[in-house]
Length: 116
Image (tube, rainbow, N blue to C red; front, side):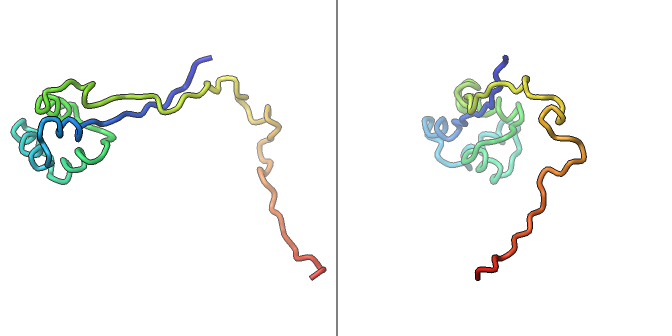
């Protein structure tokens, strides 16, 4: 049985900037601009302070050039969660005892007791 994994990553831009005495996103903004990367100041700030979900390859390459680092220095993947594959799960709902058209849950009406 194969294993399923959810992969996360650590984004080390801020640490690498600090190691190279780049303390402000505005300094990085100017360096990116000099390499033909036209991002707004707020986009650069988010790149520095957050973890990007997507980053264009040219921007990534420019960051590596600016920081004199490799992609592995900037971006560190790791396994967030491992789980066994669910290949053995039943393929049809009928195999679980559920028939098409049957309600999953029934409506329940709660009535107050006559005790008071």
